[in-house]
Image (cartoon, rainbow, N blue to C red; front, side):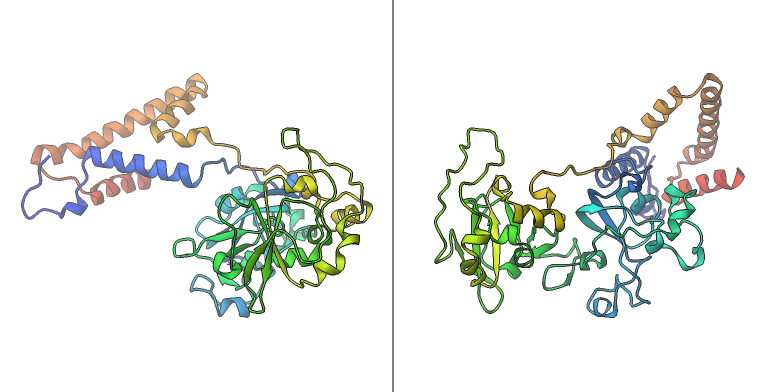
Length: 385
């Protein structure tokens, strides 16, 4: 078709090729953003390591956060923080202000529980994937741990994270899973010189990390202004390592140490440093101490992931995401019984015939088909049902 002078602008013109191309682009974008299936909540899997999301429409931060955040966090009556799984972020909170929390450990989905009940539905479940589980309305996941991330804030500077406008690189703490701006950390080893970062708060909180007896650690020395100003392989006054490091050619495994851990040997030296950031090299968890005192802390503080890597429970891959709507429809028809498949084929043929009848006057008059024309056709079909 050709465009006549005085007709609609180029922006409104829809060609068959352009329409199909736009549809393909939208499908490809959707497959990249939502690659997994979202038809099952992870609640029944218990406390697991999984990608999490928070809804700022259903939960509202304290005033101290609302006042410093962007317009995305409007000041409302404070509610407890809550997190939800990938599936619930789509099925139950579509159209809401959802923020990605990335991967968290030992967390069970809050959607439909006491923390995420709308005031108008205090006796039922607000979770679309657990509609029949009304008892969840009285349940609270007491094993979950929350922090400012659940309001969309990160780092010790407590800044709201906007992925589209964040100018700085951010570094993940291996233990607490909070993210920190590199400028808020200070001096950082070069890329390739460390594998994991452990923030000063986690170092101060856990002796098993603070006194770890390994060659695979670099100490970030912190100045009075709170920034790392130097990286050291050891601390002044620290006893030398006197056990043989495992051969890198052998499979990594825990090994008993011939001498007590640094919890006993170097406590005064390390505590005298007051604050430390740790930068750990690959394989450092193989050297986590397993003496009685350290194991007691590991168990008490839920640090078992230091001894055994946890599986991340990811959404099941949706193979249909890579297909066009047409291909998905054909595959779905193949799973139907004969009668339903015929009905679907007839419905498709009827719609196709109606679309051809709708477009025929445009072709005979040489009139351009606009986006508004196509939308009008499908609105008519929807209203006629």
